[in-house]
Length: 120
Length: 190
Image (tube, rainbow over all chains, first blue to last red; front, side, top):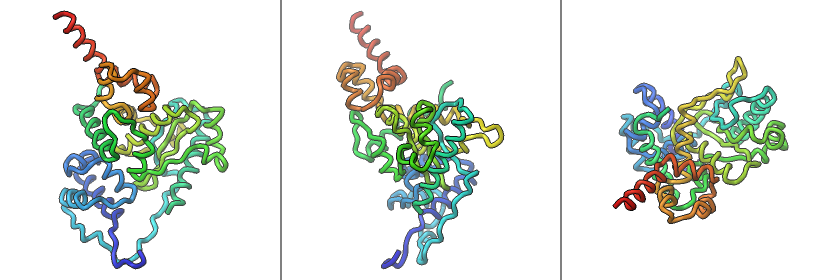
């Protein structure tokens, strides 16, 4: 953030939207439909990208949030990595795994998770 | 088993919008890697992991057919790992399937059941992702164009870089073949 006086905390906004979504007992697809933002916008936000101005306006209006609340002037605290036992996935693989396949899969998940968290 | 009411129309809207965002028309190839870039989702191959991960080597050789791809999460952020020993058309299908889960905002789950070690499987999510992956790779418009003979099967396969199984499946499930056959039958009858 050097050279800039403020930055937008898109992770905090995403978390606030997530809390609002849960309190209304909705899934993210409902959020996209009700707010009018695209599925891509929500996916990109989940990856830590800022929404465009129209997307920001639509989402904060939908959730009753104020965009100003997510403007920060200090540095961001590093995110906490989850313990590996809690790592969740989508998986496209054979439904019937052998014991060795399951162990290999765990090794791949661990390697992938390390790769993902190393990007922080 | 069918989909929830309106799901197919929703999938079509999501696919059309996502394709439009990366400037890909209904008759053009969608490269899942470009879509992943657009969605800010990093992709890594098993080959890239195999130097440090025996599991990657296992799925690249002895159990090549067993593992296609997975998305791993840290909080909301995700990364896709896929099996690059598969054919390029199968890789496209595998990647499109993982990206479909993301676009559908499917909640992730642990890959294996913690107590039995069995594979977790959400049938609804898998079927929805399969359908959206098909819509992303072979649009309904393209399926109809192929059924009408505007493109041969081979041309479409080469253009879209999809397997013949994927193309055939889309021609059937979109109703493109049935619509063209009915139209022909009506013409012959009149």
